[in-house]
Structure formats: structure tokens, C-alpha cells
Length: 333
Image 1 (cartoon, rainbow, N blue to C red):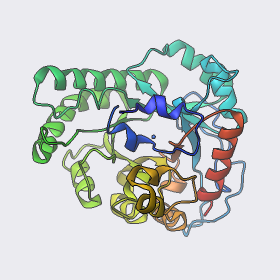
Image 2 (tube, rainbow, N blue to C red):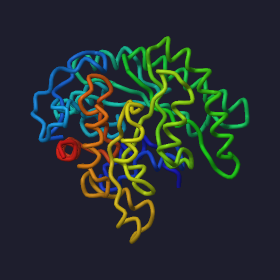
Image 3 (cartoon, rainbow, N blue to C red):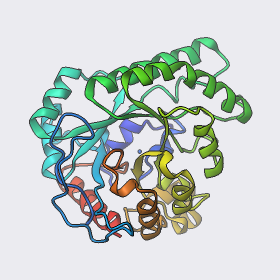
Image 4 (cartoon, rainbow, N blue to C red):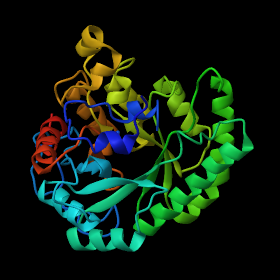
């Protein structure tokens, strides 16, 4: 049965880590920064924790930890402010939310101001059901409208980027047409992105599209626009690629990171999707190589765009603390 990103991430079954790859069928330190103190995504204070590793350029890693909003269980925390306070107490700096959605911008801004938690990015909630490459003008048009709403919502919260799955490839939606149609629709949204000051960051997911880092880089470069970027999901490429090589090739095109792992052994012995049923650091991401590649690109020490957002099975306070602990370890590799 198809599973939505929000429904999965809100599950307390922490070991079932499918992340955004599951969305493609139905719908995500020792070396971390200190608390982010302002209302915008780039207003974090200096790190309060010394990194376990110093990049080759001598600068301390300033990666900021975040989670997907759907990872926060409802146990004892109902309001957005309560959920943000929980994230702060568990050691996070920020969060990603969905748009279009039913949250109220005033409530979210008030929660950010009260807790210091930053909504650094939004995820387009309609890109699976209304793909931009769909041949129906009604469906692709609705997808474009959702993208534009997401951009406006992101501006209202001070986000620096939005995550977009650019298209879907299947028997009815050909690969080549996905490339051209999705680019044509995104170009229509770029003026609004520039107006909002929010980047459109396309993500690598199991949608049958952009299967090579060379092609992914070319896809972004085709726009020749500073508002186009890449939202790199580390766990999503392990089944058919090597994350560190993707980082090296994508380089400064990377605007954001999704953090999850994948086990090739579990994939081979238990089935494809079971590959995601592994905790951070226990799979085949190769975190030491990934972090070295991120250091080389400057992402891990950048003042802007240095977010690392977990997209794994969520849960209660103890579960979120455990995810934060594991992030500390792998981001400090």
C-alpha cells in the first residue's frame, strides 16, 4: 500500500526507515552547530560544540541538525510551539515542513521566535500527486500552482529553499519527456523564486529520474539560474550509487542535505525496501567519505545552506534524542 511521507515519518516504528524513497510510491554530529537563534534560516549563532574532525581548509564544521516535522510524535506535544520546543530540547536547530499544508504562518513564526528553532525549508506536498511532467495541463498546472504556493509560504517563514521532486517516470510518463516538461514548468516558477529569494532545490528520489550525478548536475545547470539547486538525499543513492561521489560531482549545487542510511546487506537478504530499515551509521553510506567530500565542497563549513535534515522514522522524545545522537556521530566522522 502506498505510504505518504508525513504518515511514515510520524510513525514511532523507528527501525522502519524508508524516508522519501517510500514517497515515490504514494506521496524523508560530534560536529554540529549550536542553537540557531533567529527567525531566518541563516541566522544561526556560532557552533557551541567542537567538531570531532577539522576540514582540510581548517574551518570548523558548522552543520546544523534538523528533522522533518512529521517525525515528531504527538505524545504529549500537540501545538507547533510545543513540538519546536521538543526539538530544541533534543538538540536540533531546525525543521522542514510541508507546503501546501494547513499550518498557519503566524503560528509557525511565533513558535520559531519562542524556541529558536528554524524552519529552514519546505517540501512541496503536491509533487507526487500532481507531477510537473504530467501531459494533462490540468494536473501539471495544479502542480505548478502548488510549487508557487510553496515558494510563497517559504518566503513567509524566511526559508532559504524548497524541496521539489521535479517529475515522475513510469510506463505512462516517459523519461525524456519528464526532463523537458519538468524544466519548462519550473522555468515558469523561477521569476517567483527570485522574487521570494527562495531556491528551488530538486531532490534525488526513487522516481526513476536523474539516476546519475552527472545528469543531476546537468539538469540544474541547464537553467543557468542561481535560484536552482539540488537537495541531496544521501540514503536514496546507496542502492545504485556512492554518496561521496555524488557530493563531489554536485559540488556547490547542493543547497540542502537529507540524512538517512541504507543497508545493501538487508536489501540483498530481506528485500529492496528493507535496505532502509537500518539506523543512521549502520548502513553503507560511507559517512567518513561523505563528510570528507562535503568538507571539500565547502558545504560543511558554509555560512549559508549547511543544513543536515534527518529523514528517518521518528517518534517520542527519547527516539528524537537517539536520532540526534547518531547524527552527531556520523556528521563528525
